[in-house]
Amino acid sequence: MVTDAERLAEIVRFSPGACLVLEEGEVRGANAEAIDVTGIPRKRLVGVALHELAIDEHQESTKAAIAAASSTVTTHRLRLSGGLRPIELSIRLVAGRISLVMVRSLAFEHELSAKAGGSLTHDAVTSLPDRYHVLEQLQHRLTVVPAQPLALIGLWIDDLDTLVNEQGQRVVDRINRQVGERVQARLRGPDLLGRFDSAGFLVLLNTDSEMEQLKEIADRLRSEVSFPVEFDGSLVSFTSSVMVASIGKKRPSIERILARLQMVSEKAAGGAGNRTDIFSL
Image 1 (tube, helix red, strand yellow):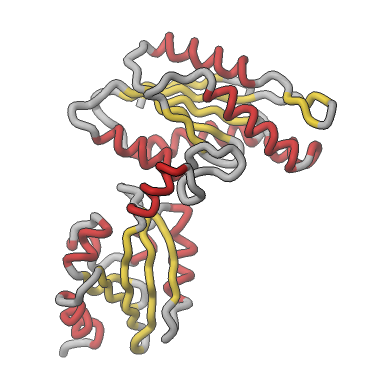
Image 2 (image 1 turned 90 degrees about the horizontal axis):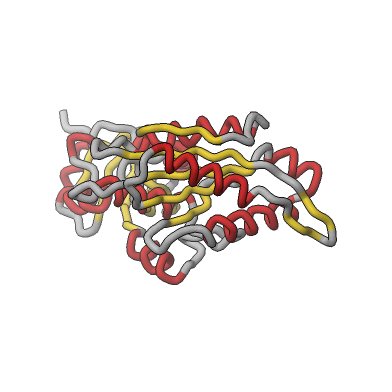
């Protein structure tokens, strides 16, 4: 017996524009345009819960958006894991537990935003590339053939929550801007600096330096950016933590890199910072 979801999936296959059919949040059908927009092969797309295809921090919001679908079209923006593609979903409940989803790529909008330093790709506090834009650039550099020499430096302001509680958000924003400017002033043209999270920055380096040289660079950077910041006539002191990682010809996954970054970020947030950690990825 053909189900409503299967019947709608057949119709969607020949629909203009990128379309998905969901039943209880699971992808039951996708047309060729949806596969092109998402970059996910049909065998990895159909039969999978749609929210599981999003990056970790977008999974819960995507799941909630699908669950809240009604006969009125609702939109939801997310990024897909793996390629970090930005997309927009237009979700409409059509029958029972079945939803029709139109999928739109936001790549062109983000490309224009990146060129203009706009809000889609840049951090409002520091004006640096934001987490997703810098990760997109990292993903691109990881997949360049032939492989180029690459290293990462992550830098975090230690125990940021305590700084916020003691000094206030305006002071912390000033510290973040100053740290960003200090790091940027020490980079070369091909290097890319972005704001990784509320307390952290990530630098992409095109370099074949040995690990010992990279550690020296990271130690020097940590000491140079961590001197006090002036605010309303007084100096505010802070320390920082740094992770430096070399990436060999055998490229790691973006998920492995993010796990390493998260580990150092948690140490810095917990006050166990003021140090340099080195890794080979």
